[in-house]
Length: 172
Image (tube, rainbow, N blue to C red; front, side):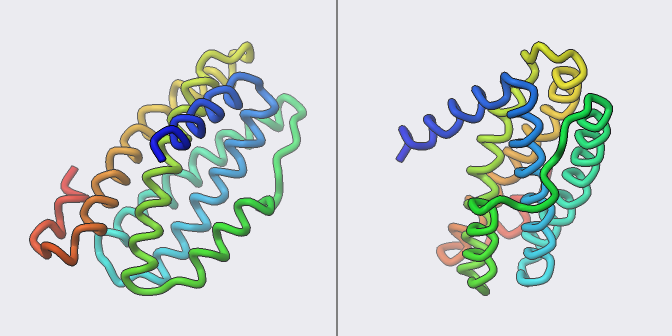
């Protein structure tokens, strides 16, 4: 499993290296983050999940707007809707509820933010100065999201064993 995860982050870093691929990938992933956050706000009753989802919605909408502005200034076209891969993930999570939803959402956020950090690290080296600057500016936020997502994933995944760590995920 670790090899598959490493392969995913390596692929994400490579996608970040070319401007058009970075824009398309970051736009798809950004839309997905906002949509999943809205879904989590509706479906979850876990306060840690809701707090995390609110942050994801706010931060990713802001980053999406910035990316859109840069892309438009360069004549690049952004996707207007989720692709099949992202739609399938939305459908899969939409079908879950309760603890199963919370665990799947938290796990997905941890994995996605590992890939996002790699994608933006690759883009920070882009030949396009504006996209590289955007990536460098956004990277610390994504690294924070990754840490929060990892904490949330641990907290939600172990909640049945111990109800004591409830607020640990969002204490940062």
